Length: 207
Image (tube, rainbow, N blue to C red):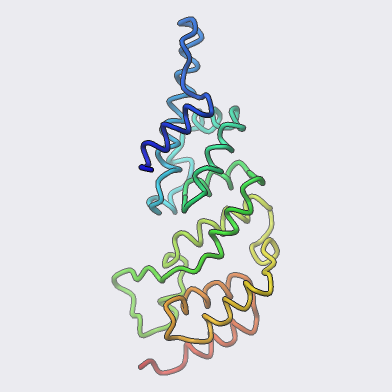
């Protein structure tokens, strides 16, 4: 389903589209509908655009107040959007501390991802592949988890044995596409041995 169709369907289902009531009442309803419509366009977008822009520069104080006053509808929209990657779904979940979607944000955070590969850095140096801006989705979900839980990521996330094994397997083989992601993830989760191993790797001559 296209993004615009998903937005429209959500607005109809959650009842945020203004009803045909008296004119004096419809004005407020229209304002709520407008805020939710513009918000839906962002949260149902799977791109990572503006992932690092302060939320207050994207949403006005009034917009955030309206979203907060209509929390049930907001949570429903965020939950629907996080069925796939949603940078702004995660950011709003963090801002409003939506615990209901924490498991979805956690799922996306632990999803293996490629290093973005911005132009400019010297990729013969391992550290160039381990900066936060190489993992725009992952860092967004990390920040959302910390905001929702009120804890640093190393305390908020407890890996299952299967998750730990998967990350460790990727981190042990530099030929794998998710090798750098795994090293980055281990650092974020404060795996001391992994950090020591990554530091040692950083001094190895690159082929």
